[in-house]
Length: 72
Image (cartoon, rainbow, N blue to C red; front, side, top):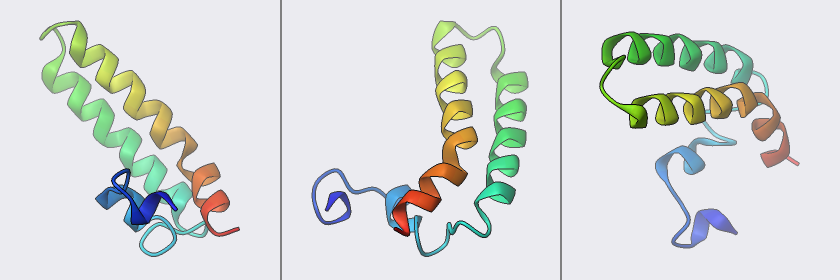
């Protein structure tokens, strides 16, 4: 339902097609590496960077669970 409305996004469209339960764990690990690189590059640029990074890490860690839910 979310995919067909204004709540849709490129990331949401990828769930179930490009992001599957079979590859979500691997993609999650890649996202966590990217967030470490982002954190290192922008460390000290204000509190927003920390908040964005923390939220992205939570999303990356939860990606396998989300991918499993979408296919149900």
